[in-house]
Image 1 (cartoon, rainbow, N blue to C red):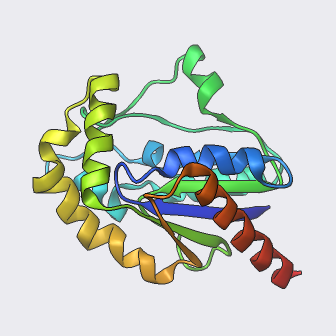
Image 2 (tube, one colour):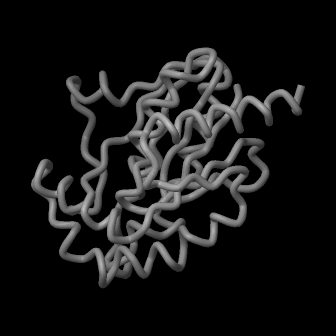
Length: 198
């Protein structure tokens, strides 16, 4: 199973890029969304909890990746960001949260998998004003209130935890580019790396 990781800040465009890339890559791809793998928030967790690498239930992520590599189907958790806890599984959700084993796994989120996982790393570098506006629009669509904490919590956490990942990336993409340009650039880089891997 070949793995492609897409990292970037809140509102960078990771999910959109992952979806389009999954459609364009040679072979069949499955998308694993790290945001769904947050653990339940504890009383001693700070306001930036959900944006930190320690918020991710990494053992479950690895267990699901191992299961997919064995050809098994898995169901991603369903997470309530504002409440800070996982939701119980209900049949309608399992359809959209189910992951099918495929040749390619795209992992998208604000963090990269641990170093020992062999994967291509893409970083979506999108300016804060663009990300803030996208968060505002998403708030309006989903009834969330993340834009109100963008400058005080989300952006500082991005600077501390997510932006440094840019240095680890195999390719840094400008999030202001048109989607078809982002997909083309990512496809070329992925193809060149997989070609070198043999």
